Image (cartoon, rainbow, N blue to C red; front, top):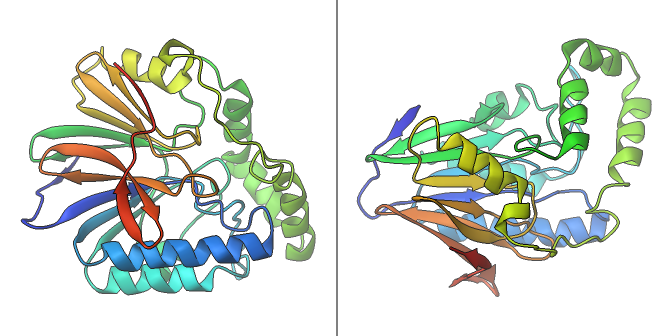
Length: 266
């Protein structure tokens, strides 16, 4: 449990699923500028920024080699970190092979799994969301294999030219690259992360569940708690703000922040 005391006049921000690098260099570069502009905008009142996984469509760190690109985003994050804003990077299913590069170079805190926050008495459960709940079997298998240290060692033995090209090939098969928009919603009972949240509430009280991964922005009541899905930045440019005990979905649109309702169900 990490405890945070919210500072007066400051907000706490959550975003996920930027999928930098997809579906093309041109589209990714345009989206990168959107994200940098958003980060610059929120830097005026941000106390903490939580980036909740799949920031990159693929990432693997060799000991002396990292994927090229995304310098504007990395530079902005380093600037914000240097200014005193606490930034947290969660591992997603696309960038679970992050290691120490961002912590050492950008000054962010790496979060390998879920994180529970106590913000002035409100409990927030934050995770990327892959592999949670009763379904998602494919991601559970991928997560188990790819987070295996022996598997990581074997991949690291490949020359970067081969390893990064191979990883990019498989990444190109993802729903982001194929243009699949996750806008199907068949009610909250069909949502794996809703089911996970219901079960998790049996262990101890939570006020807000915050996930990415699903790619569909939503705000769903789970008993006495709320489940917020952050959406993604290829179709929605959505994020969440926490301020004075309230968590709300927002959208970055045309250089300004607007309200975003998303899918709502009580």
